Image (cartoon, rainbow, N blue to C red; front, side, top):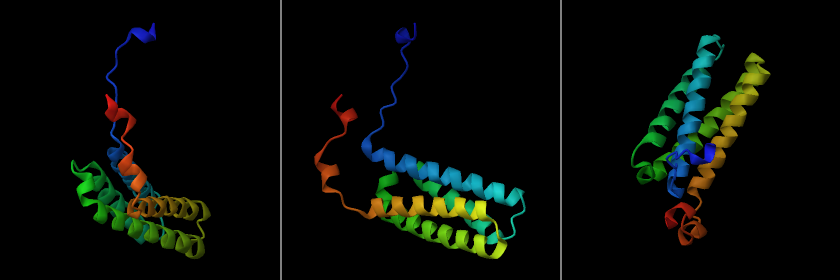
Length: 135
């Protein structure tokens, strides 16, 4: 029954996957920042920083020419990751909010890993075409 339904295939190219991941991370950070503002978190720097970094990552990830600004996005990911890790440690030490601090540190580690992967020149990626590009 379901095999007869013809849905349009979502064939993303390999280079667009990075932009989608950056946009998802920006959306998560934006949501976290709004949540921290609504629960009246003691460190307002963390809330405002999460909202601003989420908006910047969301705009950069959703830009039509996302990979043209790749060095800027890589640097932004590293700076956002460092900011999140430092503010997560401060949230644990100063405010004694263990759960929020660990969530922020976890997002910072994900952001740093994305930044490191972004800076990494991978020659294997250039040699192999995407499986979706063979169509």
